[in-house]
Image (cartoon, rainbow, N blue to C red; front, side):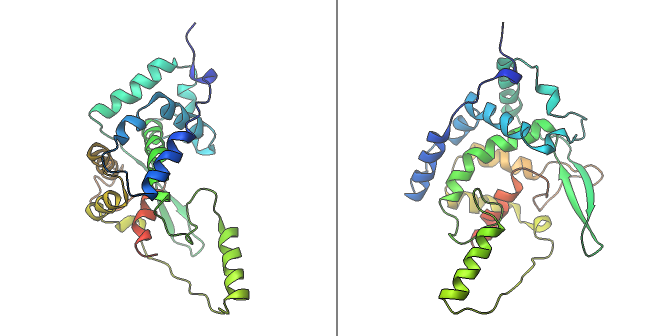
Length: 239
C-alpha cells in the first residue's frame, strides 16, 4: 500500500541547510543548483509538514483549498504534482483581505492558495540559511530563533553597558507595498542566491495576480510565506 502524506515520515534535512549557511558565510554559493534542492522530495515533504503545523493551514485561498485537501494524497503523486507545477510556474490569484490596525486604518493581506504557500515554503527553507548568513547580527524581525525578547535584551545591554539612553522609533510607511521588484532580485543575487531559475520563479511569485487588483508592479504582499524573508533582504542594506 502506498504511503499517504498523513503518514509520511519527517525527512531530516538540516545538514543541507547547515552546508548552505556555511557556504554563504564563505561567499561560496555561486554556481550551486538551488532549484535542485528546492524540489527535492525531502524539502517538499518538510514544507508540507511546516505548513500543516501552522494555524493558517486552515485558511482558504481563492481556490477554496486548505491543507486537509492533501492529507490522504499519495506521497509520490503529491511530490510529482508540486514539481510539475514549477515546470512552467504560474502562481494562482491571491485572495485579498483587510485587517484592522490599532490606528483605525486597515492592513491589506494577500492570502496565496495552498499550493502556492507550499511552494513558497519550499523556497524559504532553502534560501533562508543563505540569507541568514549575511543578515546583520543585531536585526531581530521575522528571523528564526529571534524575537522581541532578544531585541529588548539587546537594548537593556546597551543601556547598562554602553551608556545609551535614547531609542529611535521608525516606521517605513507602506514598506511591503512598495518594494521594487528589480532591486529586490538584484539584492537576492548579491546576497548569494545566484540560481537564475530560482530568481525567475521568485519574480513570478512577486507578480501573482491579486483578486480585484490585478497584477502588481511593486511590493511583496503581507500574508505570503516568503515575504518576511524578502523584506529582510531589502532591509539588510539599511541595517
